[in-house]
Image (tube, rainbow, N blue to C red; front, side, top):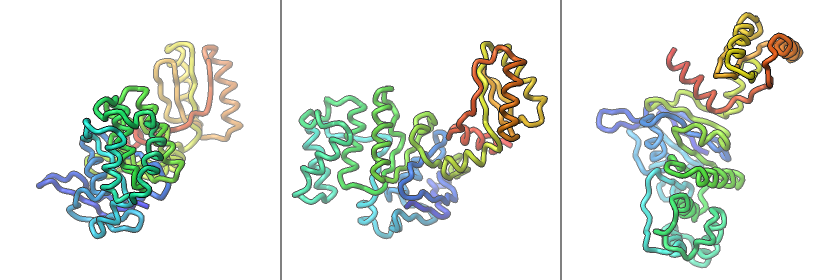
Length: 310
């Protein structure tokens, strides 16, 4: 669905994006992760056709970005990290205006507005002034506006920025709904926990470059190199003793302590892991729980950071 080859963007002599080659298949919800200044916004703007690359090639749904801008704008929706709204308009009027701008057929405007209001849970605010909406509702209205032309690809730049916890949960649920409808999404953030619940693939950027990308399940399997296990104990002192015990065992690697929790990777068979469980519970009476831990996009990101530092 989205592919780039050798994509580079300079601002004067400063490289914001450097030699980015990636592929996001149709139907993926891709987390675009990296610290502020990593090049995420520049990359999204180039994917949306709003910024011309210095060099390289981009295709979205078979359309070459830059060569066919009208076709591209019918396929792609872009939600920037900052946006302006017409506060004096009512929500319905705002959406009617942008439906005309997106060439939604006149006979289908009302139906399309009903659809995006329902999807974004703004139906009750149809006749409210845009200026009266909360920040979370304003964010959903921007997404509703962007969905009016039913784009196949939706690009969201730091969509949860400035939202309260309740609004973040509503946004997360909306992204999941859009993914279930078959929309290909690229969602950027520098906060990993905002993306972990709904992402199926990840692109990790550092200093303008992609340092790791792919489906999260494949990256996690590659990263694990064994069975990730978490042990929770009653107190931190007991965790330190358990970690020392684990460190002396050949089938255990990457032992980490965080307060009263010990994480490690077991490289042996599952039968050996069951035997280890019995040994640890017998030798360390402070064990509260012992379970296989599911790795996340955060683990992939942290492993990438360790690789970059080495």
